Image (cartoon, rainbow, N blue to C red; front, top):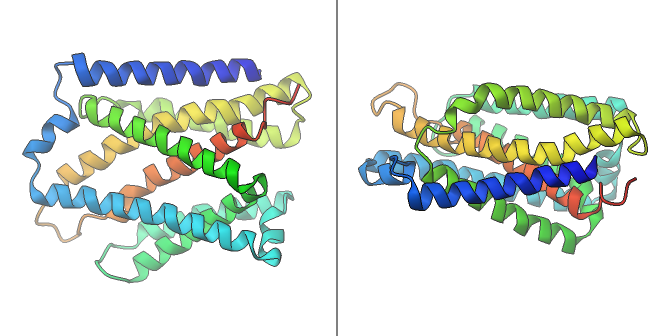
Length: 268
């Protein structure tokens, strides 16, 4: 199962690299990068604001994870693996995400920004147990994640501007499969054939899935920035716009760190 998972990731990487070369060098279709010359200053500012909040979200999450790792009492809470704590963590994660996205955006520091910081801190609490893998490994995982995210963002920019926006339905189905596999792998040991298969789908399949989600969400950010009315009662919301690419990046990082730690390679 792990060999198949690794093959899936390798195949996805080869396909992504080939697609980047094709769309960047050979394709004659109009890409998001080609349309950049026609973007207004307003659209450019919207995209810059979205990626500012994306970078700030990653920074807040990393800072929170390090702070929790250095506080034994908080680390003990984060490390709890009981069913109650896991369900509670999922509820808090979804709850803070919904709260953040439900508040109208206003510039400056307000309730929207505070909810966003709370959500980023909650994600940091979920990521904190990974610090047990050691700093050098996490630095490698961070660099690999940066490479994957950068490459996929370049692919989304070079591809036709709405090429990946039609993947919403299949991606939703894939997310359901990965989620069920993640739950199943908590109860079935990877020493069994079924447990190994579920674990492989959760880790390797999840890495491919969230990489595809990143393509989808990157083009979704661009489309939102382009289509939001200039004169609207509700301002363009860069926080909501960045939530998809932020969570995609976190999920990619978690899976890369797990793979580097030998989470699947040493299990038989």
